[in-house]
Amino acid sequence: MNTSAIWTKDFILNCIVCFVVNQSYYMTMVVIADYAATALHASLAEAGLACGIFILGTLFARLFLGGCIERIGLKRSLYIGLFLFLAASLLNIGIHSLYLLYAARFVQGVGFGLSSSTTGTIMAHLVAGSALLILAFAATALLHVPAEDHEPSVSEQPRSYLSLQNFIEPTALPVAFLTLLVNLGFAAILGFMASFAKEADLLASSKYFFLVYALFTVCSRPFTGRWFDSRGANFVMYPAFIFFALSLYFISLSTSGWMLLGAAALMGLGYGTYMSCSQAIIIGLAPRGRMGLATSTFFVFMDLSVGAGPLVLGALLPYAGFCVMYAALAVLLACCAVLYYVLYGQNAAKQKLASK
Image 1 (tube, rainbow, N blue to C red):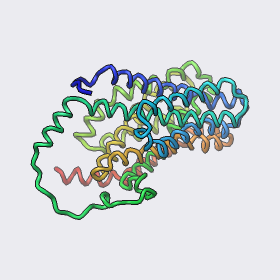
Image 2: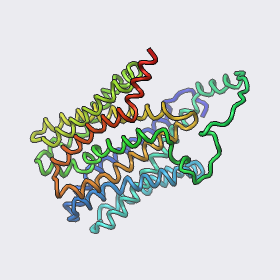
Image 3: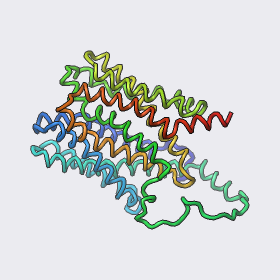
Image 4: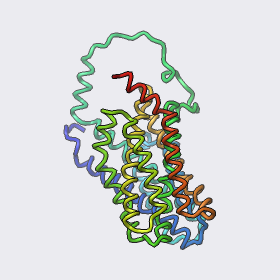
């Protein structure tokens, strides 16, 4: 690609494909648990599995098929991913068996994982092809860098293909584990919001829940990103935990549409901020050359939480109910703030003081 423009026809079309794929994911995810419970008479645990098995299929695709994308070819991989996603989605229409629903949802997840990973790779290829980056490469060729004589670092040592460090970046594990816990709250909202809203007679307002969440996430990003850079991670991360905990607590108390949508706004300020800033932390901690693997580690733990969370929470719902579940998750988020301090926050505060 020889044009200097980034917003080319190909880039825009790829963005549209990415948007549609992700929109289809969210549209099915928020209703599938309720559909399994009402149409297929599934228990809450079984309905949770119908929600979570999709993410397990996504995780399978990212772990075991992601490395094949460029060998197969980007466009061919995207076709395969979209075909699997579409075919499995169409199968959902006539399914009357819970086990067939599980199979279709898993294949959907594989299709989503493959197609979403491919669109991301295509985007990277399109942007790396801009004339500005070609100019940077040309300048690099003229740059004289003194030869370095050093021993290979741990991250540079050769490893066998089956080594765990080929799949997981160790420096990302503390924050990735924290992300697993935080995303239990997101999994509870994503998987059971429709069922909760029906029980609480808030269906009309619940239709706008994710729209309000998205608006507050997008509107807060310019401020939180600037504060993260200028004032440090702790300045934005602690409020993020508090806002998300309050969001879950308000959901547990919701008796009106305004209260539910207020919880959605707090979720945008809390969960939305956490997800962007925690990724920035992980990338900052990663050794040179392993930033991509650190990001992958982050999303593996996120996918595990969103995938297994509805199953675990669904098994507990008959004994606790929706209100108790959301309140308990609010307490968990408050505990996550303390865990963040232990795993990262205290060191970040010391580094901030040392830099002054």
